[in-house]
Amino acid sequence: MVTVLDRVSNTPRQRHPEKAHRPDQEVARKPDWIRVRAPNSKGYAETREIVRSNKLVTVCEEAGCPNIGECWDKKHATFMIMGEICTRACAFCNVATGKPGPLDPTEPGSVARAVRQMGLQHVVITSVDRDDLDDGGARHFAAVIRNIRALNPSTTIEILTPDFLRKEGALEIVVAAKPDVFNHNLETVPSNYLTVRPGARYFHSIRLLQRVKELDPSIFTKSGIMVGLGEERNEVLALMDDLRSADVDFMTIGQYLQPSKKHHPVRKFVTPDEFKSFETIGLSKGFLVMASSPLTRSSHHAGEDFARLRAAREAMLKKAV
Image 1 (spheres, rainbow, N blue to C red):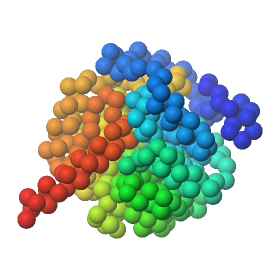
Image 2 (image 1 turned 90 degrees about the horizontal axis):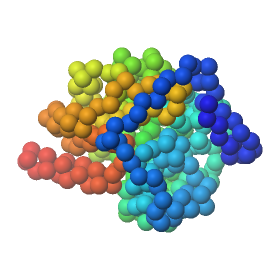
Image 3 (image 1 turned 30 degrees about the horizontal axis):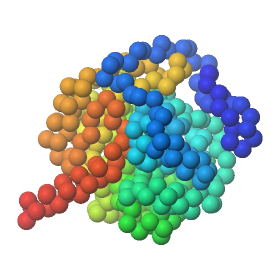
């Protein structure tokens, strides 16, 4: 099992204690179309220094994103707030599981300063699940949004939130802070939830996204899944319909990559042509924007995709006049 150094005590601990007794699953060799270069550019090093100096956590590192070299070279990073320890144990995820520490009240200001240092025009903020908090971390999300707005008034803000399951009133707190994009990932098709995402509820997540639009129709909504977890093609198409029924604007589809032998195995490497087909079908179903490719991730090219979202909405409104 992978061990990491605890950020507070500097002592080794297991990253995934809940997976320690699972049988090993062979890690399949990646096909040629998923090869990425090792991160070693000057821009990458500068981004890493900004993250370290502000004592911030990024999902780029914690989730082992394959696009980290490309994104950090451009000084694009997805900040992961509320610590690096998650209260859930999804079978696909490489973020550490355990009992989180208290929230850092200085974190919203630190994130805002890092956004200014990087000169970000669009920033993505995500978090671990914090089922231990009475609001699931909603007030902390809102504080981060307010701090970024105060210090970087021209920066657009995209958030990727947990599901706030059984946290009454939490969603309303986040929406009231008016992010530009509200993203919540379904991650996989409903038939996989018991094995892949056991702490979540599929139709609760659909309803969460629908509720955002009811509270503030001006906010773009977004969701994403991974393929290669054992889903059938018709299940992906049905999931698209569920998202459109919730008026979701933007969908991402990417290839699941197995972080370790203790994680859910890759059942299939989906070809680039199949990803292109999903993109075409998604656009025909009414999504304003689709991002579908083997290396697509929720925040990959988020700034460019936000510009596409705005342009697509403007074009749709002009057509409706």
